[in-house]
Image 1 (spheres, rainbow, N blue to C red):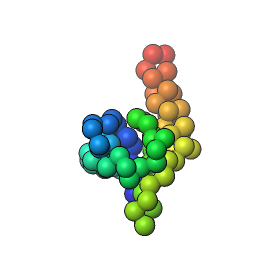
Image 2: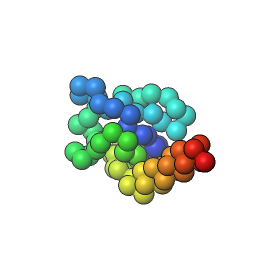
Image 3: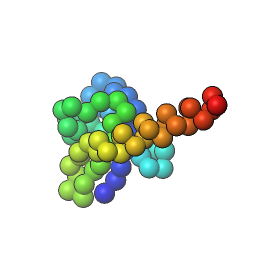
Image 4: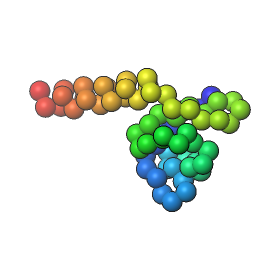
Length: 72
């Protein structure tokens, strides 16, 4: 099982970062239709992707906390 974060879309590809901060291009038609920038994706062992909404919420909360700590 691999994890990716969608950085942006370029044409038919989603430009993602893996857990080692390495950029990976994934064909858009391999992803769930509702995939958006910032989504956390999990690639199962069978090669199918799904959106991990819980990880996305956790990431956003951590980023907000870091920003708030910066300005305190």
